[in-house]
Length: 195
Length: 152
Image (cartoon, rainbow over all chains, first blue to last red; front, side, top):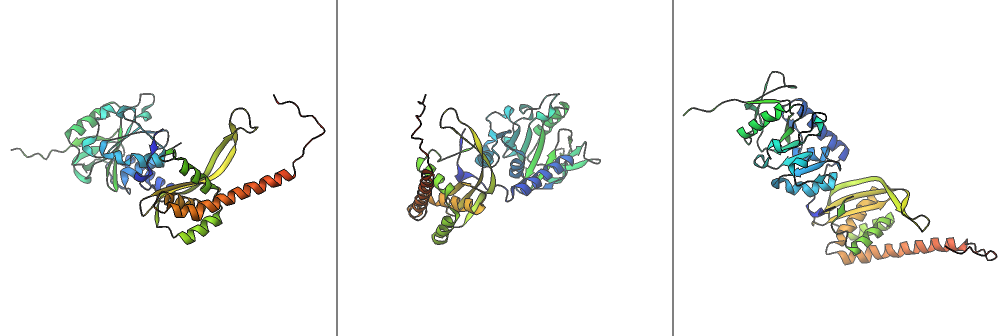
């Protein structure tokens, strides 16, 4: 097994029990109320600390590679080079997000074996841009993610057609996280001005 | 099991072993005099069990001997060195001091730690082992009148 260089390991939770419970609670809240921005300190890193263990395989995008030693040290997770093998896929920037169809989507008998995507999207706001609807959303909800464009919306729509298979996503922005379970439908609101 | 970079270093291996068995009062005495730099936790002390394996009869295959209580932690000094400790027992303080010593042993203060902590602890452990052996030897019974069965 590959070694861990302690020099590049970041501190984990101050209190492992309360820290991972708080992050798990945030993940639960985010997935059950899609579109709501949930507070979670160092969201992407905390979610990984709370959700990973030695039985999970993690794929890291180039910008997220720096977290590899820390997550190996604190959770014992396995790092994999192929996106399709991973249970958790972490993209350090939206640009590095692999195509959704390249992720594991589970099977009809075991849809929970699909991958969970964690993306650091930079900016995240609860107004405009996208209209979210589906389970957990009364009526519809607004969400604005400037870093994710039309390509993502097309892939997300294809992801929804695979139900019960499909990928769930966490969009993270520093200390906030927004959950997108596979059941959420996204429509882009058109603001384009005709020239 | 995670393998830490540096565990292939036989010297570090030896001092980790010595620190894991060092008595708390010796560590405390060293800490009071050494004045180590401040540190941040990478992993706070946590206590758990490890399975100890060995050849109980001195022959044959390794097997599980029993579980042992171990406390581990990892920290980083302000000066940048990282230290880890796996110590016997449940003392969080002991794990902290052992990790501090491990970190300093990788820094420029290595010789000082060797002289002030490791050598005295090593001598104490050797003395303890010898005392225990002497005690055991005192009650050793030799059956002179019986012929030993030939070893296979």
